[in-house]
Image (tube, rainbow, N blue to C red):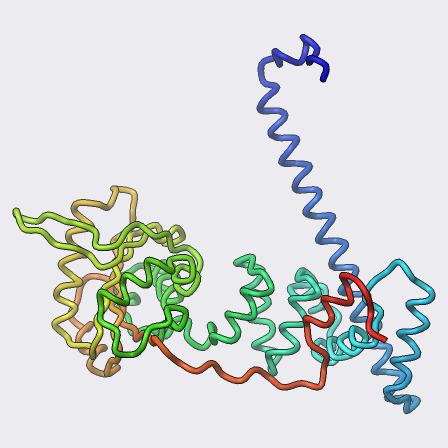
Length: 347
């Protein structure tokens, strides 16, 4: 291995900053190029799907034409994956799902083909598909995370917790805070029975903190469990403490293994005051509290929050809940498509 030239051992002043800028510019260009290629591929698949639909409708061609088309396209483009019969079926379904080319060139066109297959396979309505497509772009979800969020019914639960944020927080923070909470929270990944105690659930959440953070949603950062606070010489311990990067505030989470009771908010409010006075930095927003309980009476929860001056939310958590059946389709599996794109086609 040769030594570096002397001129390279001592870079001139400002060189390091310039190199960093160039690296960032190249990386950004690479990302744009990848996105552009992906958009063109998605548009091509959509156009093929539109053609298949139009010709089958106008000329009465049956399913056999797709088999013939797959054979001919693979012969014409032997080095290009994606022209199997199963993938052509998905192109047709993709065109049926998105009849408007303008939509394809926007949110959907920015997602990889595998993500689009998930949206087609697991969701029935255009509104749901668009919503999950947008969430995927915002949060950078992998395909597996997208599948999990759909099966866990994320959009049905988001923003459903009972809160007083609208009255206690300024806009737009109140809206963002409300959308940051769910109801119910799903803790199926813990593998605990419904009889689990508070501390047992709490410990399991910390052991599975990656899955817990995923369920909480984007923006939550774990600070600690049983966080110690000393007030007036007495010791107190917060079940779980988080910091929300978008809201710029601490979030205190208290677990209750039984039904919600109004007096639970007194303890939560005490912890919020303690965190605001002892932990919160001057630039942080007021601390938010989330009380998680097994069950709640919504009316009682709304009454209990009515006179509280601190921002709080109340939601249920489920340790065990059966997942909804995914949409049954006559389309091939996503895994089958992946195998074809990576190696051998079927037929």
